[in-house]
Length: 118
Image (cartoon, rainbow, N blue to C red; front, side, top):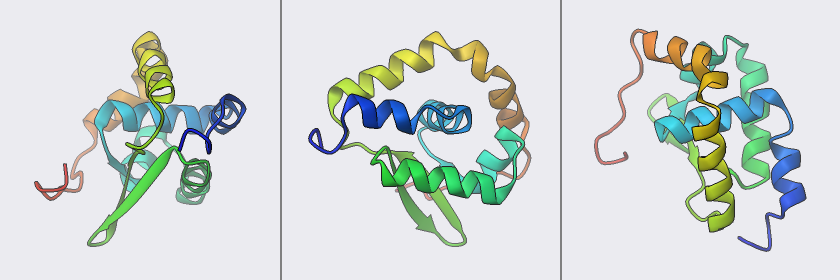
């Protein structure tokens, strides 16, 4: 994987504010489904799905289906330097994510994850 993701690839992938917010929220939560991201980011399903596809294509995200839900998580095979950059960025920018995180935390009827998956 280290050959597949270079610094320019990572930063190009995260250069869009929506993709950066999604990535940091997913890192914060461990895993989120599309409906949770729509609610947290207060954006449309087509836009959220398009950005998730870009994050998957650059190797940052993996997805899995559970019933009707598709969940996204940070790719565990990422090089350590990428994981460190993401973790440091999250910790240093919690106020930037505060509104999104509050919307997510206040969301009612969040989908239930299978206990063996998380």
